Length: 88
Image (tube, rainbow, N blue to C red; front, side, top):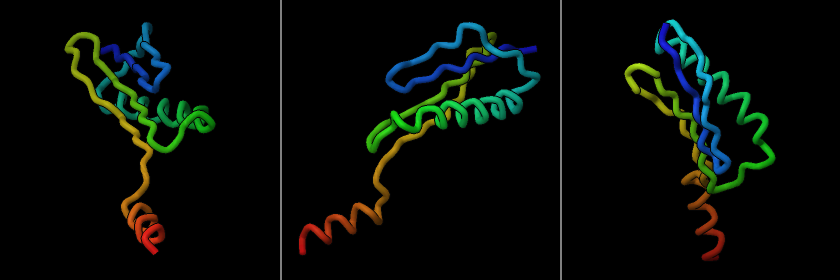
C-alpha cells in the first residue's frame, strides 16, 4: 500500500515524517481534505488577508504529489467597491 506524506506550508511549516498508508490517490485526497479542514479550523486566529497556506501531499515511491492551496485575498467586487468609495 502506498505511503503518502502530508506537508504543511503556512509560515510555520510542518514536514510529515511518518506518512499515512492509503489504498489509492483518491483515498489520499480525501484524507488530505479532512486534514486541511482540521488544520485550517485550528489556524483561524492566525490567518489574515494576504496570507497563503498549502498542504502538499507526496507519494513515497513515485514522488508524485498534489497540493491544496489557500490564498486569502480581497474579492474583485470588494476591491472595485473600495476604489469607487475612495474616489468619491
